[in-house]
Amino acid sequence: MAPYAAPSPRAGFWAALDPAQRSALRAAGRPRQYPVKAPLVYQGDESDHVIIIERGWAKVTSATEDGHDVVLAVRGPGDLLAESAVLGGRTRSATVTALSPVRALVVPAARFTGFLDVHPDVWMLVTGTFVQRLDDSDRRLTAHMSRGGAQRLAALLTDLAELSAHHVPPAADGSIEIGPPLSQEELGSWMDASRETVARALNGLRRKGLIRTGWRKITVIDLPGLREFAKEPD
Image (cartoon, rainbow, N blue to C red; front, side, top):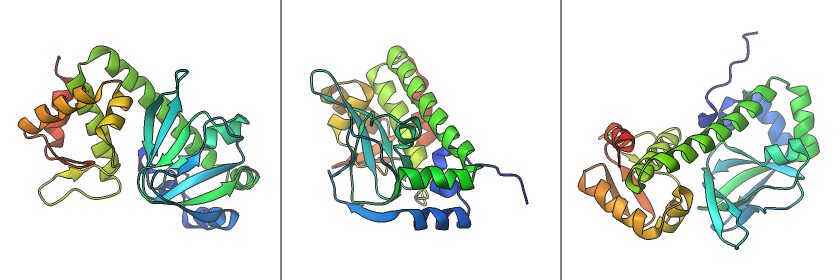
């Protein structure tokens, strides 16, 4: 048997599993549908199951002391949710809410840990996913401290375009439609900026021919150009 080699965590937890592992998880879990704006998990809840998104997008938010929700991340097809709380025996650290209709597989905590005991090589994937998310969080924090609003938005859209390209191939002209349908308020919350800052930055990126926009829809026209712009001084 060939040695286990997990693909990039960005490709999604589900994509890294072999057919037998997927069958075992399907047998251990139950399918569930979530409409737009429905919570998949609540911050502070007990950790009694994990969720694997099969279709759709969700946002991860955390409530601040003054009651505001801050966007921390988005999750999409193939992503594993709530694994750190289950494996660490902690309450949920964030709320996850559907941005679009979501179809998911819900696996009780005991069955998920039993699955990992039977398939110990998947532990490496779970650990890699957790580490990748910490790295992404640290990288964005560094960007927030060192870049202006337009550059921070360009960096965020670059990441989202690369993530979306894992699930939907770019168009014939090379453009990439960003999958998660995020509003300007949600983008601003994620990058720690006002809605007005996001609106100005979007206008600037449109004028440069890097993106085009619609209602809750952003298409990256020039990904290399957007990536380079994100690196420029403010």
